[in-house]
Length: 605
Image (tube, rainbow, N blue to C red; front, side, top):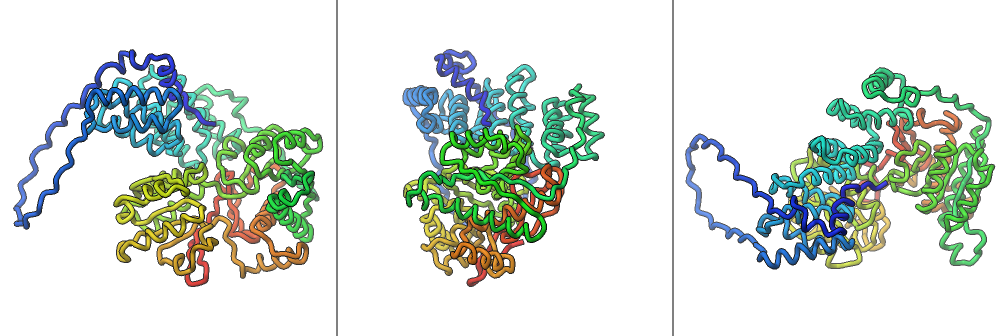
């Protein structure tokens, strides 16, 4: 759920034509007073130095007042009309101190609003930092702090978000502030983050209630949480009935479990175009069926019930209306995002665990204890990659993150930056690019940041990006050449040869890595060839691994396995590296990072 209450507020002002006449905005913001000079330092002996030519300092690029006012009015109109990129073009230059614009603080705030509307969270944060640093007497600073809260929440920087909201005056934006916290706080997954903020803000009722919900409704409660939960109930007068843990029904272990598979087979359209387009669905289901046979031989029978959900949500809705679906022990599917949201709601309403087989969108499993992703989400991949990079490249020099303009890649990049910097590192730049536009690519890789970086992260599966990025990285001097982190899809790019991929500090994020010589994969491949008469695709691999893992989980814990899964140790995969949903995570936390040495893959532990 996207929550932008503050952003509606300035847009209402704009729509009503009040922004120009608001007394708080009409006045020229007071310029910050110069800071007191520090005491003189103790004189040091001066060593003779050779004279160096003085570099010419750039002159401030002041904008003529008449032109600045025209740009400012134009930017506000564009913002009001929803043309956020155009608004940024007009407003962002006016926000810089060198522009010497009387309403520079207003321009900075409105440009941050435009970036937030575009979901360019790092760019919005930079403008808000500029606003608070250069214009500390800005009369609408509470609005800027409120927006900072949302920007930090969206980047999963919960500590900074709560700190910004805590600086708001008690009489400013109270209901909106609590509504924002109520929306974003349930996204916290790590127990340490909850506990740290409960210690910092012991009187925050919304935070306390969100944590109580996390324990009870989110399924994270353990007996060790009882004293703290009782304390929160008493201190904030919470409904004890609601927050008293109910004894979980003991999952009756069955001799067999029923699993519904809801996939867009599109059997009503036998055309070769549809059959070819849906081959990945057939492969996925073939992998599930082979896992069913393997579980049967192991004495853990699973009954699969396949439903053709078609390519539209109407067919899926008709399927969900079937009464027998409510009696299933687990649901698998679908593959399209619109259908995934429908099935997620159905799973929560009927309290049946649902596993999405392919998606990497972590937003799908927010606030729903009955919904899981089989794959690591893009944000989880970003966090794990950042933890690896800090060990591999260190924190002495900054990193550079370049990512394709898509939601999954933006989620990865945002999580990477937040994690890397939270652990003491620094990201010099976070840049988006359009892989199909040469000018966009050139701008992303331009500047001194690449040469000065300890490593560069390039997040894009587009086949032209690998050769482009590797060429630019390998042009850097060998002694200072940055390391490279890239998607595992580059390893299958026919435009790249082994010599390009074999760099000593080149690593690949490969969530679905498997060892082709491993006993598990070779046995699976042999069985698949016997049945299907062709080698398995990666989708067949995923179907097999998914049901092998969750079939064993059903057999071990029963169909109500959330609590047990959150404390279970990581499992070794039948094909891939493994699965882990520890700490209440609802996407797989195992993210292999590999390195190519010669013709052999090496998994970095």
